[in-house]
Image (cartoon, rainbow, N blue to C red; front, side, top):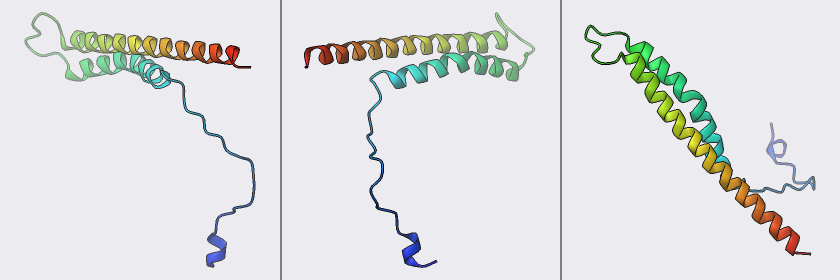
Length: 101
C-alpha cells in the first residue's frame, strides 16, 4: 500500500451536525439501568454467599436482595430526577421557540 491509498477522502459530503444530549438524559439512562440490575445483582450476591451456620436475624439472601432493592430504588429516584430535568429543558426550549419569530 502506498501513502496515497491511506489518505482520507476529503471531498464534500453530507455535513455532520452534532447536537448535545438534553440535560438529564444520562441520569435517566443510568437510573433505569441501576433500577433494573441492582435487585438482580443483590439476589445473585445473596445466593452466592449461601447460608452460614449462624444465620442470625436474617439470611444473606435477604440482605443481598434488600440491598439490591434499596440501590434499585435510588436508581428509580435518579431516573425520575433526570426525567424532570429533561422535561423542564424541553419546556424551556418550547418557550424560546414560541417567543422567537
